[in-house]
Image (cartoon, rainbow, N blue to C red; front, side):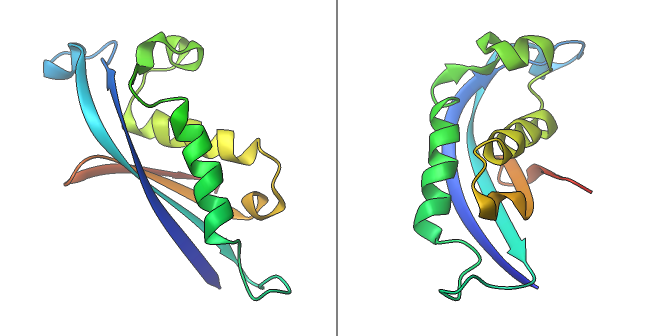
Length: 123
């Protein structure tokens, strides 16, 4: 199995609904995002996916989130903007791009701090 990863980041604010503690208040993070794509075979160029292309796709999705209050976005008005749900949102947006390589084994990890992260992938 081959697997490639790219790292990216964005900054945003959010607050957690139905939560008791500091995180119920609006606060911000410099989120670190790790996206991996795995495949059992390489394309004819010998790649899982071109790093340049994967970075372009990831940055396009992250541009929607950067310097925003996530709670104001339509998706997160219905879904609590936890790290877990942000990972799923990014994953699903990448899948929705319909790039063939993104239909493979895709995994998104969202780091809200240097010591806390959440990962989403389809089982």
